[in-house]
Amino acid sequence: MNKRVGVVGIVIENFESAVKVNDILHDYAHIIVGRMGLPYREREISVISLIVDGTSDEISALTGKLGNVNGVNVKSAVTKI
Image (tube, rainbow, N blue to C red):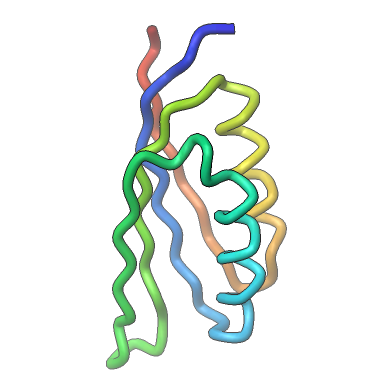
């Protein structure tokens, strides 16, 4: 399968979910090129942005698992090629 480059945006609204999010990200470290995470204390959320390089299946599996975590919202955009 062809690899794609993409951006994944993650918003964690439930602080207790952060551990599960980090566990999932660790499992997919092989496709994560870069990561930036910021706690937004005034809003009591955390925001993480990822640059990923993987197959469509790998990126979809990552975002699907993250999206199933309580209090976590995920959006992604990937190259078409």
